[in-house]
Image (cartoon, rainbow, N blue to C red):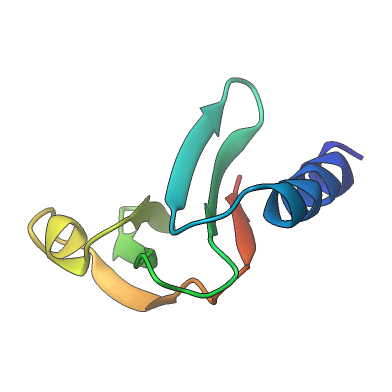
Length: 86
């Protein structure tokens, strides 16, 4: 339910905000969200890193930030896309 509310809110934001942006926010007790402007002007990437049992996931505005922490770049967040890491 909360994920649907987040996606709806970001969709509304895209309709109201002009300009270039890439945002990352942590919602306590839920997860981390990341989203980009509809034109994809500002970069945003998702990375993963193997831990003992599964993977750690991270979102950053520059791939070098994740690579410096040992993360492998999984992909770019698409223009206008919102992603959630639980």
